[in-house]
Structures are given as structure tokens and as C-alpha cells.
Length: 254
Image (cartoon, rainbow, N blue to C red; front, side, top):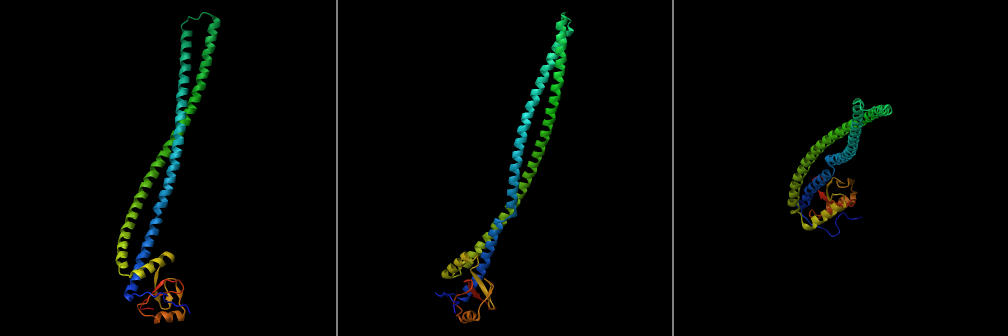
């Protein structure tokens, strides 16, 4: 039979051993706090909102660039229309002045005025089209800007909620750390070292109570021979579960 007692038998009073259960409870809660901190829903939400903001900012830059280009096109179209109008006005004034006596020159000016009016109409149509496109892009810029504002507000709200949660975790951790220091100081150094080592290698649980014939660390029923060895061990002998090797704390229910 494999013994359930530590080969180099550790000694600790039953009271010192039972403190391990309180210490284990504190350490379990500390582990839960660490997990809670690492998995705060606000953290994932902030990551999503940050990504969304980056996308919106990219859209805003692209839309603003397009709007700037269209604004230049509008100004260019306006200048071209203005130039054509000036030429048309100049020719019309020349025609109206009566200074043109040559029939051929008169016909040429009339033809030019007709061409200029047609060109002005074409330019105005093109200008209107560009202005409509610019108006559409401006609407898109306004929409994106509004969405950015909404996401920024949501980001600030979620960030504030995360800060509150983190602050509460910090308060709880400080309290538990204080409790742990007090409990650990009451455990013999060699037993504490074994407990900490087991916690590191066995998923955070280094000590567990023995209830009846079951180890509450691995939830396995101990064989009768192992249970007998534990029952017969001296109260100050530190015993281990043969299945999971955790420290077993004998209780009134053992």
C-alpha cells in the first residue's frame, strides 16, 4: 500500500493545519478576482468600440478627402462658368454697341455668343452635378461625425464602468491580501512552502478537507487502507491525498 503520509513527515498542530483551509479560501477568492479582472466585459466592449472608432475615423478621413476634392471641382466649375459668362457679356455688349459693321464679323460674334451660351449651359449642368455629389458626401461626413460622437460617448461610459469595477477589485484584493498575510503568518514555514508549491502545480488548490472518505480537492473516495492510515495518523502529522497529492485537512466530518 502507498502511504498517505508525507514521506518526510511534516508536523503541525491541528489548529495550524486547519488554518490552511481558511488560507485556501482566501487564495481561491484571489484567483477569482484575477480571473474577474482579466475577463471584465467592459474590456472586450472597449476593444470593440476602439476598433469601431478606428473604422469610423478612416471613413471620415476618406469622406473628407472626397469632399475636399469635390469642393475644388465646384470652385473650378464656378470659375469656368464665370469666365464664359464674362465672354458672353463682352460679346453681347460689343454686338449691342452697333460698332460692328461687317456682316461677316457680326455673324461670327453671334455664332460665338450662341456657342458660349451652349457651353455655359453645359458647364452649369456639370457644376450642378458636382454640387449634388458634394452635398451627398457632406451628408455622409455629417453622418459619420455623428456616429463617431456616439461611439466616443459610449466608450467613455464603458471606460468609466470599467474603472469602477477595477477599483472595487483593487479594494477587495487589498482586503484579501491583508487576510492572507495574517493567515500565512500562523502557518509553519515548511507547511506553508508545501502548500504554496502544491497550489502552483495543482490548479490553485493546495489543501482540501477530508469529508468522510472523500478528498474535497479531487473529489475521489479514498480506499479503505489509505483512509485507515490517515485516521490512525497522529493529529499533528500532515497527511496527503494519494490521488491528487494535496494536503488533506482532517475535520469533524472525517
